[in-house]
Image (cartoon, rainbow, N blue to C red):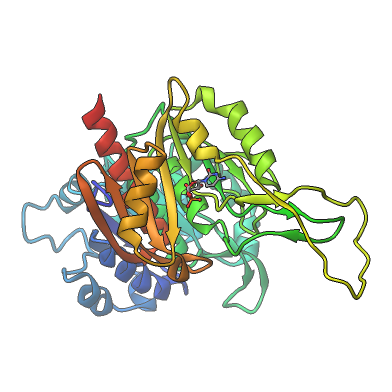
Length: 396
Ligand code: C5P
């Protein structure tokens, strides 16, 4: 399944210790099906050799504006062929050049000549980062519409500790791929549930499940990347909020139900990823139940099925369910999809999915089943969102 429409980037490498991370970044992007053309400044070639990048990208690395064998227009040709230019690492010097529109080598010239988005990943010593000149230049880049990725804070190659470390290659790859996503869902409102619920037994004990929330948060992230407005109703998790999502934090299934009822009227798509507890304790105790030698019996009463409620509304949004099964995936998933009257249901084997970073999903819709092969949850979520876009397109 198509993950990204835009597939060609120019990876510009400038002079800095973090240049070694650019090799890993090139590898990760290529692994995601993106064509990478590397361009290096002369200083970058002192930190990492073009041979390494050539071997990884499968293309000659360009560094001089004077050795263009074609038409002497490498700076134009390169940027026209690209969906984005990414500078990683971006040195303080190169950032200063970009901010001022200087163009005295191939990379700075192609940045100035480009007609596609520019993303920069600064990497430098903390004093250089904090210097007012650098901060001015960064502010200028942002004002010019350049996306600044990082930097991060931590141990630096010079031995100092602070802001200025380049983001890790995997973080950069995620951010770059996100920026390349076509904004298919601009103007679409998506309501999502994610995570487990916690059903109190008494003041300190409760019933919950092993859902980490990772899949739901990944779906939220993927939807945001496509330009959707996302409201994420989340049970208790330890994850950081997807940037840009409107968060509604809940604890119990009843609270999750209330939050969904409050927000559902405004949404175009509802995706129930949460592992909602099917039962809650009939009589919760305000105080900790004291231990005694005798058996303790808890009466459990069923919770409302949030997804079924939403799907049965008179004018329901496009509803997507998740199903974690422990056996007979296909049978149970299809049965669930029909019972809840869902146009789309994503199913997985609970033992493989819960808490893990990887997942294998099978999508069930009116046309049959579609396997999304095992990969990380964000990649799965992107594929799911692309499928939803396709189905919605067919509907309208
Ligand atoms: O029936 P089952 O719990 O397996 O269905 C799973 C799907 O239904 C998930 O999308 C889940 O978020 C949703 N669900 C719900 N409310 C419940 C139980 C499940 O929204 N009480």
